[in-house]
Image (cartoon, rainbow, N blue to C red; front, side, top):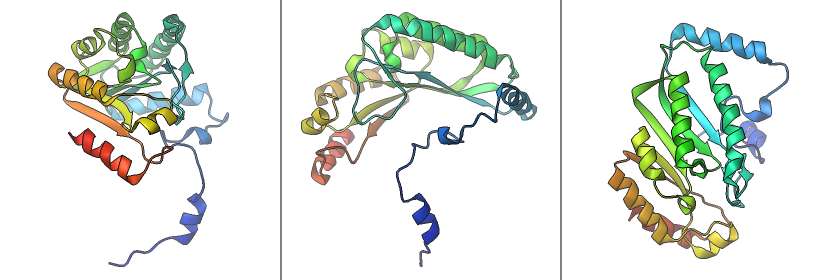
Length: 231
């Protein structure tokens, strides 16, 4: 089969660019779209009564991963999250006020940052606020991103009790030299322990992030990481 390449398209995008995490991407945001435009679109979206997906961003991390391009705040103080959560709850109230309550939320994802930066009590409060402002479908996929290095006692159990059924965690690479280079020391034994906990608690889906192209990686090192991940 003959493959036809668009030379102009390849040349156009053959350069560094922002991560494509939303549509439109942040690079296309302009002041020409204001608050009233947003309200109008929210109300118009109710006409089809399509289901909803919620993304909750928790920006806090206890340490910086040097490869990361996410919107994060580095802090060892657990009290920094309170003010952020208060504003987040206000945003939920405002957004929920424009959306038809008959529209079901079929997907929820807590990302970051590090969502398990929150205390157990904050996790419970946040999920309660979601249910207050939105109609969560009983079969919804409810997902959370975790950093295994900073899990505290009771967090995984609490997440499961709240209804979370999917977990995503960053592994990146198991090679120690690579981990030191990216400032993310994460022993293989820790990953195995956390995986066992997640399976024992009955999470239906477990996602593991691997990153290729990190400092000191080689094809052989990455192959070993993939093989150990499969184990």
